Length: 426
Image: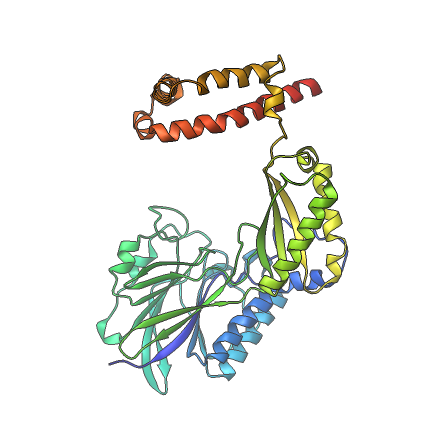
């Protein structure tokens, strides 16, 4: 029987890294909040460690970005590790591709309870609790930014070391690459009981026997990193049972807001609807947010929301007063997935290319069901680009073909209408 213990598993802190794709403009509370977001997120990680009385914090790479390795970031990092040490919490760190050993700067001394793994070979360090060894932590750091070798091959568990934790910054599942590629099979067969991984910014549990875990990053950095970000509280029982609990640490959340414009006729209605839903976002998350507006549907607003000037007007109107709020929802961009508003019934009567297309569609649509399916399959099979992929043709059953045909009525008319408009402009 082993010893009960617990730890925080985090990775990809990227302390001091600026947000991507953000044009703030002006000044106000949000500038300071955004600039300090990664530091505040790590504070919340250490808060969670102290509040839950864990025995260790494991940081699986990318503490900093080597090109944003400021003295302020180092001081903030050291301050939090001293706070952890004062509460009896050890910290174990491996370097990743953004903070490799050769680029690491430690101008600020770290407490004795911080252990940084070497890049020369896999080391085994004890995790102590009440004067006894509760587990053994194995780890290896990146020496340079790019590591093409499989570092996981160097992990060899000694059964006498008790519960084994492996720390590695890696791209699991890649046959080759620059980020210590390895397979899930070799991790599972290594004898390690818990793999504390880093590098992938979205949390994933790749296996539970043994646990192979990416906690994701502690603070979203751009619009591709939407949703909660944080760390894992890992509790290990006396018999080696593992329990995971995700703890949110992001202080600013990246989110999507999807709006269908189909029932909106004036730009003011759209802005009112977005503002109404913004209030709901703040209530839902309880924290500031960076929001991408995703517009869908078809309607009279299509032309305006698809133009650069229209989008700029919407964003400026929405963000005008947000910069002065501490609990803000800042709209960073608009993704326009809207379509032109086309009256298909009227267009069928017009003697132009769109009307001809729609009337031809009607001829095919009026065919008996079985005859229609055969005709659609024949068209697909005769396409030169499709003929090269016989397996693809076989996977297209009749239901898929009919659904695609139904969508072609509107999509085809839209494409021809846009092409017609573009030709007029030129």
